[in-house]
Length: 337
Ligand SMILES: [Zn+2]
Image (tube, rainbow, N blue to C red; front, side):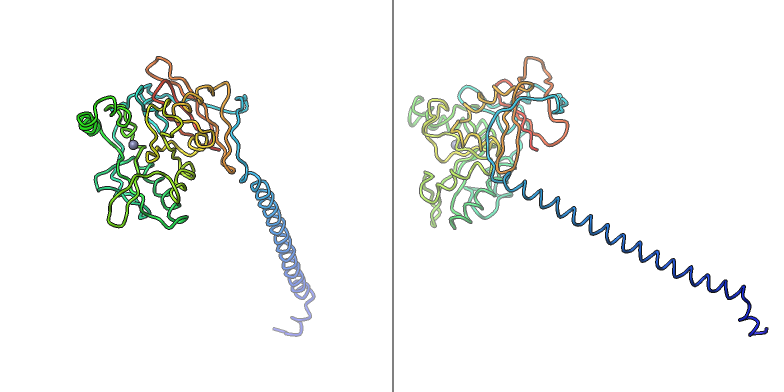
């Protein structure tokens, strides 16, 4: 091969040269693309930052916002219906059980031993005593918050779920001591106790020897009454509502109803009897309770059960909701945005 000729070959040289230029252009194009991608990435990141900032700015007033107001249903709100057995009216977190409305034992018992689910921020009388899981979970949170605030972990659950036989035994025992008319002020007639629901418990204050004193909700313990709503609890039998509840003042008896409802009852001073009545004026299709608790938005409305075996309950097409019977005549839907 003639090397000189080879080098001198213009065709070959041009070829090589073109290839080099081509390569350079390719690299150059790659560089531009890289820069462009970087630029796009910067724009995307910047926009994201803006969105987050705007979100935070909007969220800050929302987080401090609190209101209970009413609003009317609009055609823009999309609903579908779920079919529920009329008997379901007797179950859920909002069931009213008192001397007029008996608890229905037809539903499955969903209680579990408190001892197996509780944390160490409070005590429980014995291993047997039971509640619904949600009630225990929320007591765990309430008493943990109480412990953090006061350093106290000596609240003790002394009575929780009671089946019919237990309530009957309790009732008969007291009747022989005190007489029927005195007992019905304090002990519910079997079948009519809120303790049948698994959503209610009596608490006491334990000392170091393990003895318990009546829970009065005074001093450090006022925290519980003031903050119970945050965890979905109400003080069920307040002193100023005895004529409506039919039960004497019981600062130790707490009932789980869910946060949105506990909040309204706490803020307005309504007892459960009044609240169940109040919600009935917020019928689906007409108006609803529009609730905001520090940025958490709820819609609450009532659906009458009617007389048929099956009830069509309207629920939001999107978003989460809960349905509870009221144990009187219908259902309460709680929509959470
Ligand atoms: Zn009680």
